[in-house]
Image (cartoon, rainbow, N blue to C red; front, side, top):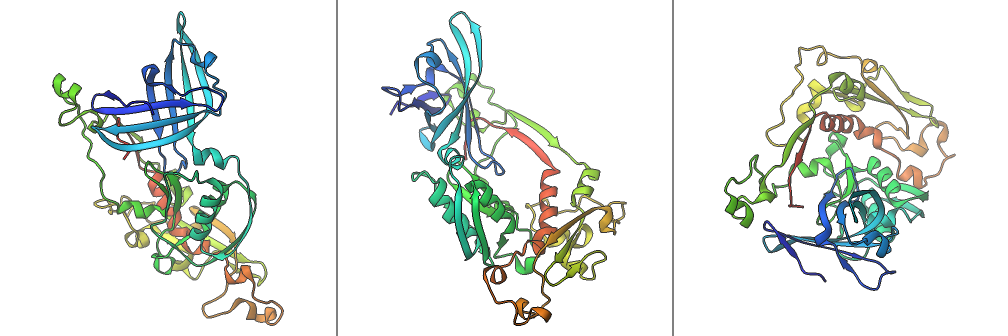
Length: 390
């Protein structure tokens, strides 16, 4: 293993290896820039390494898209990150001066690479979505080292799904849409499950779980002014300083209206029973979200649970679902207390089975989930900080 190289209190090692090469290569002295991406909607971690190459690396080292980058990163002698990436792309090879050029290596985590090489053909009968996701993760994409899958909020209600050749991520995303948080009483809370890779582990969890997690580290809108302090990493060293702060989206009320952030309705059709729950719906509180009525019942970030749309404005007064967002879903639908296979003309003609014992229930939590997701994407800031993957 190559030694760690110190830079302003931040130590790192970046080693490139290949089955076709006789030995690994330490890239630290060639690195101009490292960008590592962790995204809740990603879902796999990626890395981009900008190299100033005066040694002819690309010509001499067989970089063909199957190499491995081992990235080890620590702050002030405390190791916080270590991960292997598969190189899948080389781009922007540019001659900068005589016998020197720049090139960008693109890498994805081992699990992300495995996801593109796997297809799932398997029945999952009457299991909760998180059980199925765990099965898919460990049997199809897990590298077998390091990170594991965290499921802090298990799912409620069994589900039946037959995987017919999807790659693992496609199947997991389908299951995420059907998942109901076991703590979401009576489907009245959003269940926007996300699957993604963080610096420490993988997560399959509802978004509101992350609203309650503690702060990892404070960052500051300034950099140390004292040169000695800056170079030696004393007190507020660079990894605690915010490099840039930009508002990506502030608000777009018209777009939010059409996407269902303030008012949305889910209409359902059961083609077997010929039951239709369509506008005007009598069970308004069941399959419709109304901002002024339902906002306070949802989970919010601390100190941010205030309405930002006035009840007296045009948007707040909106009452017609067809003027906002409507969605049609085909689903099994029985009234309270009914048993599906014993209803009406189905009595005695339809036996219980996998699909009936574990039906789709997404329509019950979709109205609140639509609002949460649109609310999240309508207010976005981009913060750039160097150094700390936590």
